[in-house]
Length: 226
Image (cartoon, rainbow, N blue to C red; front, top):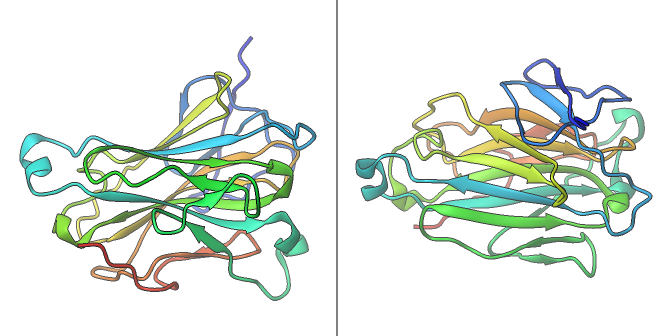
């Protein structure tokens, strides 16, 4: 039985209050979203978020391909009801702040990779999660090159055969940051959306995720990894 079904949304999607479930092994198109059929009533349910990149072709890899996975998060307790009212800034889990699955925010980064491959974060206690934004940062030492040229993509899975791949489509060669996928936990089943937005050319300020589920590029602290 196919558990996944895709739905199409605008480039900045607002998922339906009752999104359909996603199915095993789908790849989202630009601006698309899909539900993954985990439920908040299962205290053991976890989502694993991967940032995968192969470095692109041989010449691109030779020029550098050190990317960083960031998971920006808003806990369920901080979500702005109805997406109205003052918006709070969420937090960030990354290679410098690995987090934990045993305490808030119940998100853990599993370590830095300096070469093309994979970085992974696990999101636990989905009943305690509000929103999570999967982002990638390109180290300054990489020089000029698009995330697409590195072969970057996000892969979200529940570890039980349900996998959503979130690729990139724009060849932006001057951004250090890209927001790839938004995971919305405010429904009964999490909804994953392809959001693909880039920072301004040369800006190292990371994105900020707000308690309304909205996010803003170039609004956070400056990051630097040479």
